Length: 396
Image 1 (tube, helix red, strand yellow):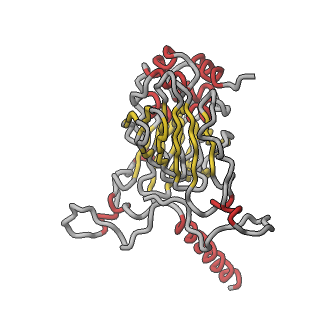
Image 2 (cartoon, rainbow, N blue to C red):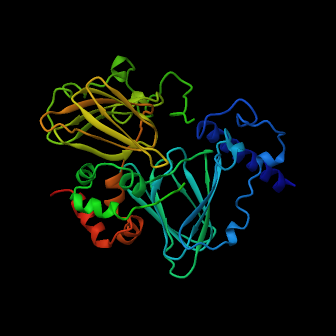
Image 3 (cartoon, rainbow, N blue to C red):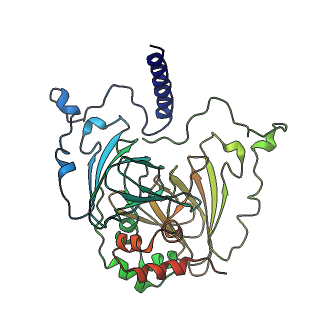
């Protein structure tokens, strides 16, 4: 009897903890039990909440890596419910190329076979693991990650859960190399030549994988660091390290940030800044911010900017001094100063105290991901991968 009571208490504690996390994460809460599509005029019964498209999927064979999703696109009842599923099938030797999910973490449950998995954090540290049947692995929200079935004989199968009804997928190979970003911009970004970029583009990748609040609200006016023993006055809320930044020269593209790392008072305030300086013909390579959209204000010069949505559509614009441009949360984007003579300067605002930055060239090619996995992902040979990796190595 005591054992049953203890189990019941533990269950309630776990449920309470889970509920507290759900309240601060994923899609915004809705104010009704569920949301009906605007064109729904029929009776609402159990069918509305049922998805049958995965019947038989676990027993089916597939010649290539395959994803079957149950998101709000396939099951409209998921709208507002902050959850979705995907079934992933990995034939022998297949790879799910490096990608991100801008609106959710991914919790992968390997139900059959073996998988080599990995993700890269915003400091460019690579975390890897070899999974066995029955293992679970979490890929944090917005970070570049991959899966690889290194078994030459058997298929692996996994079920992934997402804390969003539409987590989105940004394929690194697809969004960077198949959406019309200029060859010269990519060559500069990956520190290689245009011919190498064109070779990768010629593979004609057809990766078709297939609201979202900022930081959690705090319950105090501001948050003091745990080791803070000084007087709280205006100094605590002040950052002075941007003084002179706007007028300073720079030989290469440069970012000066004011996040909670530089200004602890920003903790819990859901906002931060960055000053971006683009010397003539310099580029800010393709990257993402996993925890915030970016609102860029061009205060001097001209910029060519672009981002790629989760359908792999490229949106571009040429900005003049005084223009603003928004890069949606978690999507691959870049900026390029096309002027051969003058520096451009921009101020970017973020809806997070620590938006994070995931550099596509660095996170994919400089963190130790196996050459064979990258060659399979980008549909090229290992020699080409090694050439790109060599170009991105820090100069001594």
